[in-house]
Each structure stands twice: as structure tokens, then as C-alpha cells.
Length: 197
DNA sequence: CAATAGATCATCT
DNA sequence: GATGATCTATTGC
Image 1 (tube, chains in turn purple, blue, green):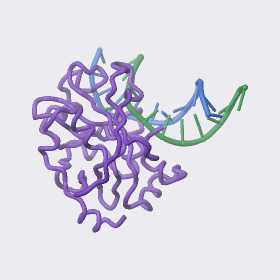
Image 2: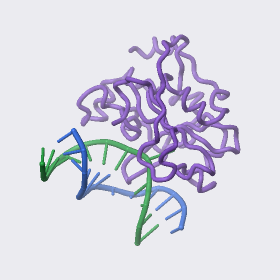
Image 3: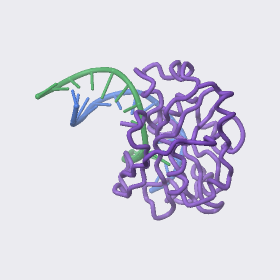
């Protein structure tokens, strides 16, 4: 898809979208479009990470240098480095002072697919370009430099179609965690080919 | 197919 | 000093 056309058919999500309970924000991020530079993809899988009671969430350890943004105003990016190799993108939810975020786990590539292929030569198909939290940051060129970035303006933004077709949402346990392993806080678009493995 | 090892480092104990 | 919101390549059936 052409970026100009995409911008014409979508609006940037306002800060008020993010200033709500984390689970609602996570669910409703499904189907929205993440844009960075000349690349863009539709969000097809997310996970919610809550506050103090959610021991799987980084924010449950309290306010530290790393978790600072999670306690700040909503609509900003929380990017963290993991396993010495990968970066993961989250979007901060809840009113300022209350932690909570949505981990973006998979995208359906929409624009800049050639650029994504160059950044992820291992991918054997378009579906594999961004079907995982570490893969999508590579494909879109998102790094720790985006820590704290405002996604309601600027080169990294989330947009929603002015008119979108309905789809079915599935809820499952989150992937790759030890604590709260049964909580159904992973949300995905049923039947989508780009959800993670 | 499924299972697993290895890469590699910021963060917090 | 151990751990981890991952991914890839490789092994073995």
C-alpha cells in the first residue's frame, strides 16, 4: 500500500485512546496501523501488562530507570532490550501515575515491504517479516532510541482506519512468561496469517 | 514435524 | 552474578 493513500484513509489515535484501562487499550489496538518512516503494518497481536499485581509486568517491580515511562503520561513508547539482542515495543496506557502497557507482538506488513525485507533477510515470506515482538522492531527500524517517543505525533505513530471491516478477537495466555502464566491477556485477530508462532 | 542450544547484554539482586 | 515479555539454526524422530 502507498503511504500517502494510507495517511488519507487513517487518523492518528489521540492521547485519550491510551488514557484508559490497559486491557481495553490492548484489545482495541488490534486492527490499528503502526507507522515508522516509510514502513507500516497492521497490529494483529498484542499483550496487556498491568501494574503491581501483575508479576509478569516490568512495572510490578516499581519505578526504576527502565520503567520510568510506564508511570508517565499515556501514548508514549516503552522500548526495552531483551536477551542481549532484541528490542520490544510497548505503548503506555492508563492515566499518568498508573503503570500499564500493551506489548505489540505482531504486524501484518502494509507499506515499505522492500525495506523490511532488507532489514530481515531471514524472513522467507511477507508473513514472517514482523510476526513476533523482536521481529517487528527490526522490520520497522524501532530501537531504544524510541524510548519515551510520543506516538500521537512524530515519525513513530499509531493510526486507525476511518472505516475498518469487523474481525473476531481471540484471548489466550501470554507467551514466554513465568508469573501469571494463565492470565488471558494476549489478544489476536482470529485467523490472521501474521500472528506469532 | 518437535525439541533444544546458543547468541549476548541491560537490568536488578 | 543470574535472569529474561526472543529468534534462529540445528538436531533428532
